[in-house]
Structure formats: C-alpha cells, structure tokens
Image (cartoon, rainbow, N blue to C red; front, side, top):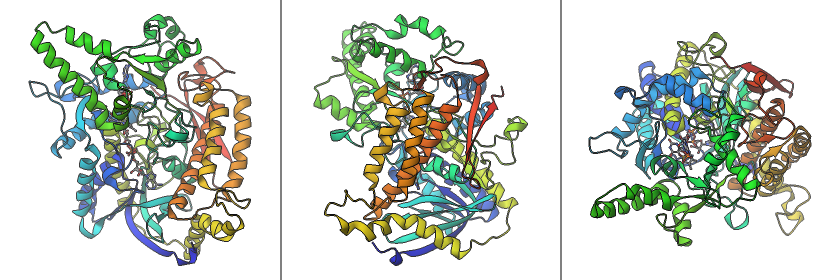
Length: 626
Ligand code: SFD
Ligand code: AMP
C-alpha cells in the first residue's frame, strides 16, 4: 500500500476517551453530563466496535464488585482490606476506596438499562460470593455500550465516537499530553486527535507470554486477544510513572478453553483436588504460614491458591480437577424431598452451562466435545499463561492521583486519576494498584476519571497548536510498516520470509518465546531469576531494533505491527520491575528462584518510568501508605 494515498484527518476535542470498553463506557456516560454543563466536546475512539469490544466482548456471568452498602452487609473498609490482602499488602487504599464507595450506583444503572441480575425470592440480588453478584450477562457489553453511545449522541455536535480506529501513539507538547494518533483499520486514513485532556482506557495485555494454546488453538486465551498493551504503552511512552508492572495475573481456569472458576468455587461451593482426590488447600495449609499475614487470612490470596496447586503439579500429582460432580451432588443431597431434589439438579445443570455460555462459550463447546456432563464428570483446571489486567487480580498500570478527600498528600496531585503527565488520565486496566475493580469498578473508575478530566479542561481552556510538521512525522512513523513492505516484498516469493523485514506474527512468536523462557512463563513453571531476566532483556534489545523493520501488507497487519510494539514495551517494563523487586511476593504469579521469600522492606510499590528525554528507565520504590 502506498502511504502517500493516506488522507490525514485532524479531530479537535476537549476530552478524548481512548478505548471503548467498560471504563470508556463509564467515562462517556459521566462525561456527557459534565460536558453539557460546561459546553465541552467529548470524543471516544475504539479500535473495535464498542458493542462487543474489550474484555466483556463475550459477556460475563457475574458482576464481581458490588458492595451492597445500603443493606449494611459490607463496608468500604472491608473491601479495601480484602483487596490489599489478596495483593499481598500492595494496593492503594485511596484508589480502591474511591471506586468501592461509588460502585453500587453503577450496578443500579446497569440494571436500569436492562441488564438482567439474578434475584432471590425476596427480590434481592443473588450473591456469588461476598462481593460478587450473578447476572444473565451474555449481552452485558451491548447494553452498557448502548448507554454510553446514546449519552454521546445526546450531546449533539459536542459528542462523537469513532470505531475501528487503532490508537498507536500519544501526542505530547512539552510536559503535557495533548492527544493521540492512529489509523482506521478499514480505510486509508491517518487520524490525529487533539485534546485538552486525554483519558487512556485501552485495557490490559495478553499474548506477551507464549500461550498454552499454540498451533490448533492459537489465539485462544482467557483474556481477549484484542487487548494488546495499548493502555500501558500509551502512558509509558508519554513518560508517565507506572506502578506494579511486575504484578501479572495468572488465573486458574478450566483447562484448554479457559472457563472461569469463580462460580464453581463461590456459588456451587466446589473443591479443586489433585488427581488422587486430595484437597490441596487443606493438605498444604501449612505452606500458607510462610506467607503470613496474607497467607493465613481469609480468603486465601489468589496467587497463593495458584501456588499450592503448582506445588501439586511439581510433585507429579496432576491433573488437577474441579470436582463439579461432587459439588452438585452435595447441593442436591441437602434437599430431602425427592421431587424438589430433581428440580434442583436440573436448575444447577442449567446454571453450570449458562455460566460458560454467558462468558466463555468455547468452554461449553469443550464440554460438549468431550462428553462432559458437569454433574457427572469432574473437569481439569490449570494455571493460564500470565496476563496484565489490573482490574482483576493483577495490578499493573499508571500511577494516578487519588481523590482529594481520601488520598494522603503523596497520592494527590490536583486531579483524581490523572497520571504524572499533565492532562493524561487513566482508569480501568490502564491504571494500577487498585485491583479487583472488575467490570463494574472499571466503569465506575471511568466515570470518576472523566469527571476529573473535564475539570482539567475547564481549568485549562487555553488553545494550542500542533505543528503540521510534527503531525507529518508521526504519520510517517505510524504508517512505516506499510512502506517497508511496499519497498521490499517482491524480493522473495513467500512474503513471510524476507531478509529485509519481519512480519508481526513472527515478531509476536519471538517475543512470546523470550518472555516464556526468561521471564517466568507457563512452560517454566512461572520461575525466573536475575540472570534469566538479564538475558531476556538482552534479547528484547534485539527485538527493539528489529521493530523498526516490521512490515505490513494491509491495514490489518499494520494494526498487528503496532499491537506488538505495544506488547514489547509492556514486556520490557515487566521484566525491569520484576528485577527491581528483589523478593518473591506473589509466588503463584511468578517466583524468583534467587530471592525465594517475601521481605519486609519490600512491602512497597515498585514503580518505573521511561524518561522520554533521555530514553532511560528510572526505577523507584514507593511506600505503601495505610
Ligand atoms: O470473573 C483500543 N472480568 C470480569 N469482571 C466482572 O465484573 N465479572 C466477571 O465475571 C469477570 N470475568 C471476566 C473478566 C474479564 C475477562 C477477560 C473474562 C472474564 C474472560 C473483568 C472485566 O472484564 C474487566 O475488569 C473490565 O472489562 C476492564 O475494563 P477496561 O475498560 O479497563 O478494559 P476493556 O473492557 O477490556 O476495554 C478496553 C478497550 O480498549 C480498546 N482498545 N482502542 C483504541 N486503540 C487501541 N490501540 C486499543 N487497544 C485496546 C478495546 O477495543 C476496548 O474497547 S471473571 O471470569 O474473571
Ligand atoms: P474468577 O472466576 O476466578 O475470575 O473469579 C471471580 C471472582 O471470584 C473474583 O472476585 C475472584 O477473586 C473470586 N474467587 C474465585 N475463586 C475464589 C476462591 N477459591 N476463593 C475466594 N474467592 C474466589
């Protein structure tokens, strides 16, 4: 493709929302209210179609954050304590509390917009666990995105959303982020968005580590393949401080099709056992004492639940099974009346299938393909490859300002959820140290961040210009893989093999191999050490050089090229931060064989920043403030 044929489209706005997922929808909804009051413009840009974009694309079967503050069962403080314990002491109280105190109202909105939430006979929400409620959520994202889109439409000329525009790079002016650049994945158009405030809500990252599913299952993962590190890349490349970049998430999932386990553990009260039928959470309870006080608190942190399972596998006690059959049998046995027990069995079977049909359809196909009836047959579970998703049980993302009324002075710099770069905000999977926000909390944090970003627009109304030569330079850089391909592709018959360039698919395989083998991926039991990471960084340096030779034969591949550049940066910041933290704090997520235990002086945040002026990485330890 000839890049001279690309049209340049410049869009000017006040608030620019990058992404169309849960946090972006929350941002659009909230922003429309404050924008109307202040006559400001709001623009949203998603690489995909909002109706089914991001992590909630397939739907979900639970809302994992609902406090139910009105009925007095839980307090915000309880939630902060739970989150902090699950993250082995590392979380920002101010951010977690801010989301928790507002999240219930978000869930009530979802219900108002038509999301079916399970109810008991008294009309109360049905809890899955203490913080989670059950939904019939196949259309969750469609419902939420429609509300967001109509909020923008109601703004008339002041509200717009762009779909299928891939955001590649931030646009910086001095110490401020003033926009973003990208391209359409459907038409030959380069886009430059100019904005007074930018909200990065482009999600987390997958396929940085080699997935367990390769070959015939390539592309299958628990986290959706379209979240490819743009969230972290955008803030890193802007020079923002990042936090918890070492805190990956390794979920335990039904093996091979990645069906979630929450409903089984919490709603159906199922147990997981080794192949001999032993409940390793009981037989290995003494191991948890080594990780006190977190290991000995309830519930056991997710990474330690993983760790006990990994120890079983190491000793040759696999496969590991979710005892779905025992769980259902037990629930039915509690009912004395035979007819009622039969009805209950049918109901449980139906709920079990719906759990997957609502959010991981392929797991239901897997059961069907292997003649698995959950009420009769246990299913294998396994630890997935690592992902970056701070809204679940990971924590990586930008270091953002807390709310004025809750944050200690060290955590407040003027605008809630603003990163350390002026005018650049982050929420959802793009902001760090506020884990367990999930879908509802991400939407809520998007609302908080958008309101704050619009306040920034009101306080900074002065116009600015981006020099046309800068726009042209960014355009050439972003479209370069098309030019590389155009120049060299006729050199060989097979366009995948060419000494002058590398295609994004091969680039991704190389990245995944390095991360898997040197940075503690699934195939090495999530273990790594300084020596391994140093070698890994050395190889990443070659990849950075080769990134300049990425080639794209069409717009789709251009997107793939940029996705992998984004992944590369997430990967490098991950290794550097794991290296910086000289201890093992989350043994079921990664284990440093050279520093096998937890250390008191590392009860701290490990933050990093790529300095755009020097091109150097800066690492800094920050106190956890209680
Ligand atoms: O339990 C660009 N999550 C669950 N949350 C729940 O509340 N309940 C559940 O049941 C959940 N389960 C679950 C969950 C996630 C996944 C993957 C599965 C199951 C299989 C977590 C939530 O989904 C998650 O917390 C939120 O979705 C996070 O919101 P946000 O907004 O931070 O991320 P997003 O929704 O993925 O949206 C990202 C958006 O960015 C776009 N994007 N746009 C432009 N340019 C680029 N370069 C871009 N790169 C990305 C995306 O298109 C998307 O719109 S459970 O099983 O764990
Ligand atoms: P998952 O399906 O693993 O994403 O889990 C959904 C929700 O249930 C999340 O809030 C998890 O933290 C929680 N959860 C899952 N398994 C357990 C467990 N064994 N004990 C406590 N909480 C769990």
